[in-house]
Length: 244
Ligand SMILES: Nc1ncnc2c1ncn2[C@@H]1O[C@H](COP(=O)(O)OP(=O)(O)O)[C@@H](O)[C@H]1O
Ligand SMILES: [Mg+2]
Image (cartoon, rainbow, N blue to C red):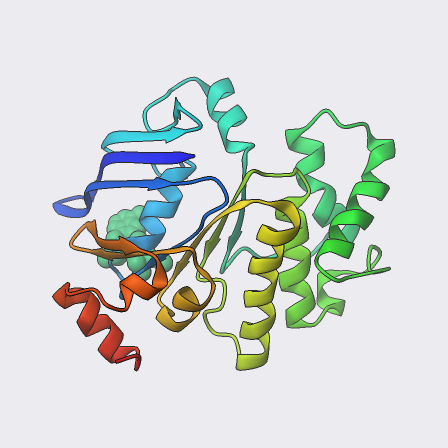
């Protein structure tokens, strides 16, 4: 479980996260939605300390990652996370095998002789076969997304963070990525946090949807309750998303 308590993060005078609190339960497919620039990426980056919060707690399975300075502990907690960022490109100079095994090499003690099996397994999970020797330049956009996801699940994370996984994609690719996300939950039982401005997608796949506004979550509920929310920001966001 990830429990966030009173999380604050400012850039200069701008308080982007302003006392955020939330609990993300095991097996949740938790979506964070909100207009661009509200701090969704800032939130997700704080979860793995790609950004340092100013104050507050982030308990990952009971261990605080928000303020620890212990690099070993930080590495151990980070190891529980896989992430797929929109800009999270593959390493162009490496082939698919090297890309997918990258985390195994740097984050685990798994012997090299195991890599081919693991890489094959993870590629199969995202629907790819016999692509190990290809370079990213030889892959289609959809295949790149799949390889990037295979790379992030290679180390068997407990949590997967997705930042705008469908932004800029056409409807077919969006559908593919949506299925990938729900597949990972169903096949691996991972807990997922999906940051998106696509409310339709969030309502479609999530067990819970949280709306960020003014540095906090102003609504956090199951999709069917979310749609009934009386919160004015939620209602406005639903209106501009063409849902109401
Ligand atoms: N490293 C940074 N330094 C200064 N301002 C930043 C930084 N990262 C994000 N911001 C600002 O914080 C706000 C929230 O950004 P972000 O978390 O990326 O929003 P979202 O992901 O919801 O679109 C934006 O106004 C952005 O310009
Ligand atoms: Mg963002």
